[in-house]
View 1 (cartoon, one colour):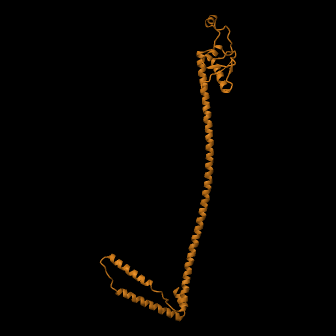
View 2 (cartoon, rainbow, N blue to C red):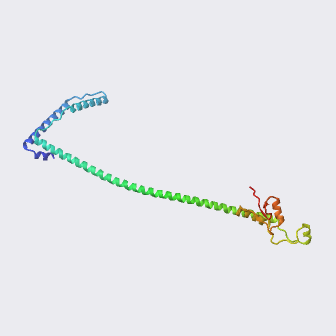
View 3 (cartoon, rainbow, N blue to C red):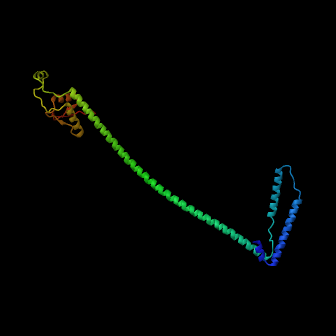
Length: 261
């Protein structure tokens, strides 16, 4: 580049530029000789020598900072050519900067697209998660209601089974200890003072109690049961005497189960 620029200059400009170069080389050679002939100051320790060199360098830097720069050549042709070279160099550097900035811009653009894609994916994931959470909440509520219903149904079934067992046990006990009267021989009739003819439709004591309990449960506003010929009078008397049942205050042919609470 320098040789091409030198070839484009006129002969006078080239001669002037060569003279300036020779002067600069001569001055540089002189400075090198002075440095070689100058005896270095040796110190006892390397640390002191480093400090002295640093101080000398700072002093020289301060001196050069006060020197005003001078134009090497006064020829306008040389200055124009140097300006062209500097402009070409500056343009090349600016092109490199522009290329780097474009590369950064493209990279940032790609990064932006990736971030937008990632953001959209996260939004979709959030929507799907929110929908799943709502679905699980709904399923949980339904499951809770269903479990409560099943639990209640199981408890009711258990109570029904327990009630049936109690009634069966009560029926067995009453059948064993308080059986229905039977028609027996004449001698036994006189001993037990049982009427000669008994109604064959008499119901057992357990059946009477079941009627009373069912009446209380089905129609609690009217818990009274009508006493008919199927009720054996000794059973009715026993229930009334031991406070298990009570008669109606206005109708003696009705009775209900005593309230035990």
